[in-house]
Image 1 (cartoon, one colour):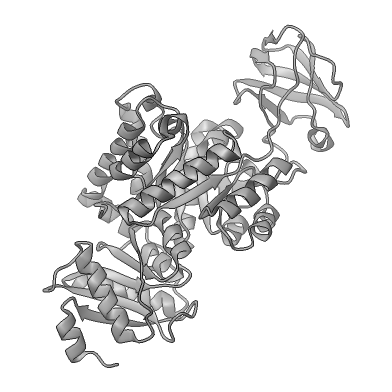
Image 2: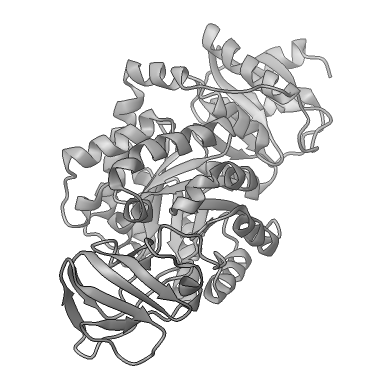
Length: 482
């Protein structure tokens, strides 16, 4: 199946998408990557979903990526005698380490690491920021606060602390167990929650041991501040706007999103825009106009992927949600303004031979009648560099390594093909590229393609050759050198 769009769609699996028929329907509707949310469900349930995706992959004969999203540490208040209490603006309220049940004046916050770094003036946000408090005085086991935005505080509601860097690792004990489970299962990407510093990414990479690529979720102000270092250490980025919109003023999230997406594009690393993209479709078969505009904006920015969370995991219309994203993407990408925006936002500092090769491939393809850019890649780097150029013709990535082609399913514009024949001569690389272009409907025998590769073959980071080639194999054998 050939996708008629460049941006990729990530669909989260859950109770609404828990069987083969639905997952197959999600793929056929346009899902390129399936997300396993490790915050919900047992290992057995996630393993079953993983197996179903791999069955769909075999049946459709197309690589499919699986992303495991780690939960991250969860900061929550304790419980109340009455189950809940109303807080009013101006009220005084205390958080402390006393495990006794709370009342209208105090509650346990069983996280000494929070009290260790709190300072007067810092904010505590409860229940996704609906309740806001400012710290007046604090110590190693308490924080006396004033309520600045009231509401009902109840048992085990989540707490955000946006103004300080918490001395917490991004990986809890649960996350470490989930990470090892997911890697052994064979997922392609690991999404890392609660990232605050570059060391969090390095820790996850050390634990993954190359078994999965690391995607850092940017959802905390500290991560925004440390973004250049986090981006450099990551294989990909997720703009997780849910917690960003809680811990930062909501009006600051759109410009932050644009900066994060553009920087990831420049670094040739895939970037997902996520959270509440089609939220109303959890219960409605139709999205709001604002949601459609939100999805379109991410696509105009050049994001590699847009993501569905509860819409496909727990909503009433999971397949319709994917179809909506697919239709929005096709509409945006057919708009002449889209190419103008993409080309105007292309910022690349080319310093290597590979940079020059892929830039030349794009320019040749756009200046002549070229139908596809085909790249042979071991690690996926060449395909990612081609995708960074955001060419106006399709990208076909060919690799003998299944993990590589699966991971590239997240990358903008890349059609992934696992090669079965060993390729040790450039002529056979060109032949394989021409066959793939014809087989998947990108070109006919009368057309031409651009082929990039590295010689010697099967060596990472050696992209050094470019060839404009016919798709007619007879012409290739007649004219190409060995």
